[in-house]
Length: 312
Image 1 (cartoon, rainbow, N blue to C red):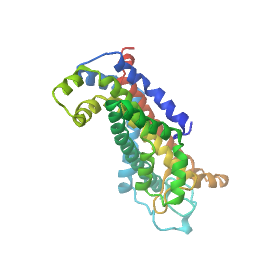
Image 2 (image 1 turned 30 degrees about the vertical axis):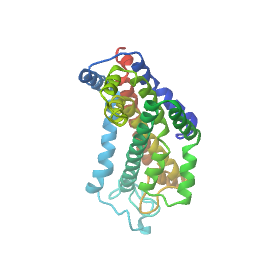
Image 3 (image 1 turned 120 degrees about the horizontal axis):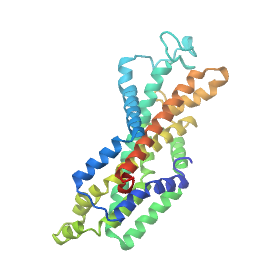
Image 4 (image 1 turned 135 degrees about the vertical axis):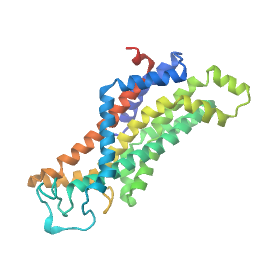
């Protein structure tokens, strides 16, 4: 499924549903003990550890790598374009003479920056929106969730393509556009969590002691819904990275001197007929591994925070 489509968003809601069910079952644990159990269950998942290792590798590769491996990514060098991998250029050069390995590092920076920033924006907006809707309830809740339903029905990819074609795409603008169009899923998840939390005794006790709604949301409801929020954030990062790649592949992405893995994939696809494999397969592998790593981490976190899954 393409990220941003209504079916994709509903699929992610179904994927995270067990987290909400575990709270509905009334299984309450002491906070410190619950955290230790969660971390223990997460550490026992080998795929999760592989995911963390891959993410750490690409963070170092993208942000530390350029300081250790110096390459020209600014000036076009047509005398050394389309060079095969060899001495001085481990992964060859592209049609503009840019070193492909250095290009992949630069593209990784854009992908990870946009992915993390967009996920943060979507998580903050969605968490606050869902918490307020779930706590207030009634007409306000119904009105706010109808806005979420409308947002979920609009394909995010089309919105991003339209805005990217109309305005110049930068790391900041893509982060904002993707984040603003991706908060609907966390809003619905947090709202469902808050609907169960607001019936708990500690919320009733806080209300009896005169706690304001702002304090209830920030100090009690959101902290107790963090398990759902954190799990969803990992999926948000993976989706944002895919969005950037798709937009770049369709030539609506970042503009020179900025570059994304999607831009490189587009150029590599055009050059594959000339057997310039180094322009396509390495960057494609980076994209696949990064998205897969974040999804593995998300799946492991979901299983770790789900009480019923920990007992299996």
